[in-house]
Amino acid sequence: MERPTTPLCQIQRNCYLHSRQWLYRALLARCLECFFLQEKLPRLFTFAKNQKISVAAFLSTPDMSTLFHLPLSEQAYQEFQELQEIIQSVQMTQTDKDQWHYIWGSSKYTSKSFYNHLYKDFHPPKPFLWIWKSRCCNKLRVFSWLLLMDRLNTRSLLKRKKIKIDGNNYNCILCTTQREETAFHLFFTCPFATSCWQQIGIQWQHGNPFFQMLEIARQDLNRNFFMKIFIIAAWHI
Image 1 (cartoon, rainbow, N blue to C red):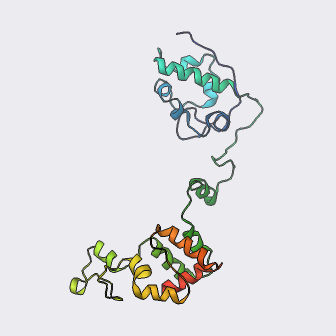
Image 2: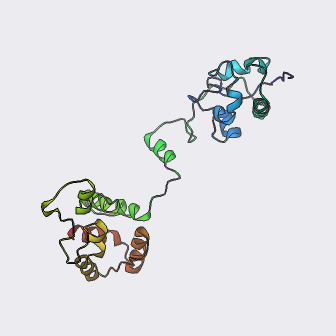
């Protein structure tokens, strides 16, 4: 196999070229689209003599092929050529100093930045956002969050936890329907709860998915403080 040569390139020299421990920031932003070289070139990585070589050491080597165990497999050689293209696409300035940059594009680390980056593609159901935007006290907001998460200690939940209660009766005690006391039944379908909601003008469309049911009720009520009404009413039920 012909040994290709590699020109110098602009890069942060104190980063590891292959290791997961460092992001290859200069190449990353422009060429790798937030992939590690180890993951982008996995076959070539297995041929590397020093899998934690620094960028400075890598670029100071006149013949890049000497950094790999030869001969390379066909797939590894294709990745070797891809690595050459990545390096050639970046220009290097010798006077630039090394800089730290986190994956979210800032040189400053904060817990908020890390959290926002980690959950940037996570979109919870809207009712959860309504809870924390409401002006209820934290006690009521946590209660409503537990309700939406089905974590309230209803008789059904106690049954799932294998907790015995008197008479081994896990049915709802607010009605005579002989239905197991789940959170959904207790707060939304129980005749007692239904009459309570009707008194304040809220109708539940039980045929819809749960969170969609809440959104429809909010639209029907047409009040900006719907979630505050819901939280306080559910608390009193």
